[in-house]
Every structure is written in C-alpha cells, then in structure tokens.
Length: 169
Length: 268
Image 1 (tube, one colour):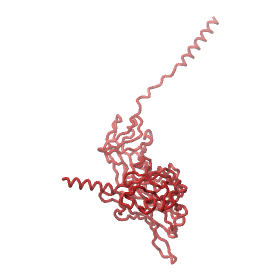
Image 2 (tube, chains in turn yellow, purple):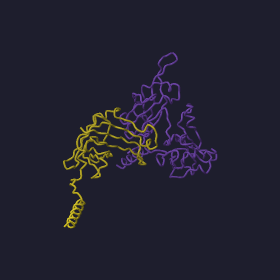
Image 3 (cartoon, chains in turn blue, yellow):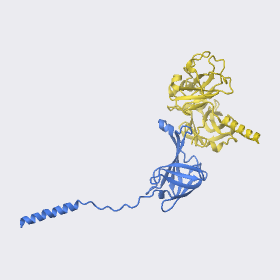
C-alpha cells in the first residue's frame, strides 16, 4: 500500500512537471502597424540645419550651421493627408516668407518603400521632390525629420544637405 | 522659312557656345592629390590649327602677392614640365582631343612638387614647342581642399549652387592688411556675374552679424537677389566686407576688405 502511494506520488509529480513544460499561449499582436498614418496631419517647420557634407567628411571645422533664425523658416508648414487605412493622398504647403523647402507647393505625396518608408516623395504634375526620412513620428514623438540632399551635378557626390524638423500642430 | 530655321539653329549654337565651359576638367572636382584631365579648346587663339601643343602650367595664381602671409602659405611654383620656354620637353606635350582641342593629365602635388596645404589653384597656357605661339592664361582653376586652412574670407558651405543658402564670413584676426585687422564690419557687398563675366544687376549690400569673436557673417540666397538676363545664367559672385576704422586723429574712416570670387557649383 505504501509502495503504491509512492508510485502514485511520483506519477503525479511527473504529470505536473510535464504539464508545466507546455509553452504559454501568446496573444495575437494584431496587424502590422501602418506607419504612414503617423505622417498625416499638419506639420510646422521648427528647425533647419545646413550641413557641408564634404567638410564633415574631411573632418573640417564649420561643417554645420543652424539656419532657423536667419530666414523666416518657421512660417513654413505642410499638411499631409492620409486615409484611415493609411493611404497617402494629397499635400499642401503654406510657405509664408520662408525660403523654399519642398520644391513643389501642393499635389500628391507618397512614402516609400511601402512597409518601412525611408523617404517622402512630393509630386506636382511632372515635378517630384524627394526628401529622406528621419525617425518615424510615432508614439509620443511629434517630430517629423526630413533631409534634402544636394549633389554635384556631374559626379553625384554629396556636397550639401538641409535637415528640416517639423513639429505636429 | 528656311532662313528662319537657319537663324534659329544659329541662335541655339551661339547660346550653346556662350554656355560652354572652357577648359573642362574630368573629374569636375579634384583635390591636389587626384589625377585630373584638363581639356581646352584653343579655337580663336593663336594656337588654333597647330598640329602639336605643349602645356605651360603654374600654381597659386589667385593669391594676392602683396599679402605676405598668403604668399608664404601658397608659394607660386612652376610645373615640372616648365623646363625651357623655347624647347618644351616631351612630358609637356598635350594629347589631341578633337579639332583645336587638347588635353593633359596630371596630379597637382606631383607636377608642382607642393603639398596639398600649399596648393590652392593653378593656371596654364597652351604653346608651341618653341614658344613662338601661345594662348592667354587659363586661370585660376581651384583644387578641392584636402586640409582646412583658416582664411580671412570664407564661404559656407564651401561649394554652393545658385539656390543654396550662402553664408560669407570675415575673420578679422586673419586680415592681411592693417585696415582688415582693425576693421569693424558693418556690411558686406556681393556682386554677381554671368558666364560672359558680365555683372548681373547691381551690387547687393548685406547686413552683417557677429558670428564669433573677431568673425562676422552675412547670409543670402543668390537667386533671390540676382536675376540673369534671358539666355544667361548666374555663374559666380564676388564679395567683400565693409566697415570702419579710426585714423590717427580719431576720425572714423570707411574701409573694405579684399574681395573674393566664388564660382557656383551645379547641383541636383
């Protein structure tokens, strides 16, 4: 009788141990987030930095300059329209007296590549202006960072860049 | 109708010729340590129609030789191929690159025997072997700097296009003259030129701001201030800083810095 109880106890311990080894069930994380929806809204230009890329690459001093207060850049704002499903549609700019930021004033915009965008392209008729995208304005981050690169027309070498920081309105 | 077509074609050719750069360089930007090939069209010069051409090449042509500090920093030097004006060596012989066109390949530091820090620009002319015929000088042709050299006048960014934000800087501590070293700048004057070297509009006076100790700056956008005539383009600008000094009697005297020329870079 005592022997049977011991076997029963070992069996019970084995069942509990083996049962504990079963993997947990994880909840479904849902659909992949569409980052394009985070670009929607009106963005006001809050900071502009000019970089001499060639000087920076060579380690020269004077490689960046904050242009924000030198011209009325903070006049500039852009509205990016996007559907609830994350489809990019139209955009409009309000330049005020700001120097040119995006080469086209209004039209259609797109973010690419599709799932993890690295650039925003602004199109008006046959003209397109493409700016490199900084970090996504997701979560509590309400800053959209776009970079415009200027390259030597004959060699393609990167010479100058402008980094535009927009704050969501 | 045929006359109209010929006239139009001739106009296009003329405009094209006005816009053509001469000489051209491959690559278009190069440091003193890079190999570069220059190609020059000698049409319309005494060298036109010659069967052979030789180069006469020399460094640092843009330096104001009355400025002792700059002269010491950028000594003038002859190319190693400039051995004898009346009997150029085979090393100076240029390669035919088409009718009246000649090319020559070299490396700045090697041909001038100078360090990258000593080379700012170079000039050259095309001649016959015996020197009986020659072109005028083609200069200055600037090297892309490999080392940063502080200068009294500086443009930021170092390469700018006509639509860029351009900041011109004046560092009084690096002035070459007494007036430049004592001057307190109040304005900067910018003058723009097209590809024919004709001035575009009138000179623009910009307000200056203090950038750092002994340094003043002014910022502008070339296309906002200068509009070239139809068929022409903004090619370069010159700038200088204006200010005041006190003379020996304590009177305020208006003075200006030396002037610097900047050629626009074509960018996309």
